[in-house]
Image (cartoon, rainbow, N blue to C red; front, side, top):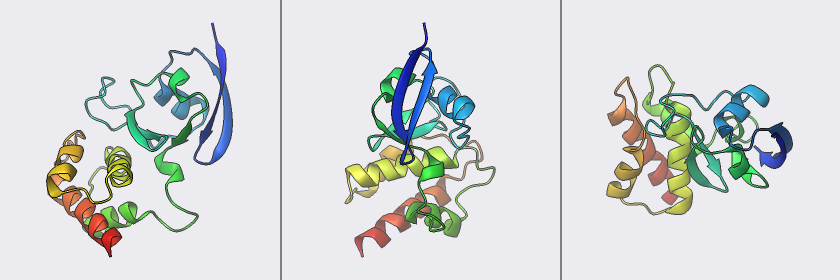
Length: 156
């Protein structure tokens, strides 16, 4: 039985009527036309579908729509402030930290979640966080360079 859910997505109040167990990824992509989060594995292993719920990175392919109810959700589409990219987005561009771009939104949001949770994260903590994300193009050195650069810029 469908249920109506209200939540904030990228700063905007949204309401969706759907099956409570439907994946949040499907709601975002199909109902709200927010296609930045990608379907990769459907098992939460690749993290291409990462979004933030109340600042915490989640695999939206495994997160039920019900879990987003009355929560604040952020997708890659809402990360920039107007025409100004988020510092992690800028760092990814500067480092050329992507090839096909399929994993990029999830990578950036995963790094944002860590930066919010641990602004002074160590290299080991950054590496541990980013290892949760899979990149089939193997852009890992440039991805880590971008994340490190954004972290060091934030400390200045």
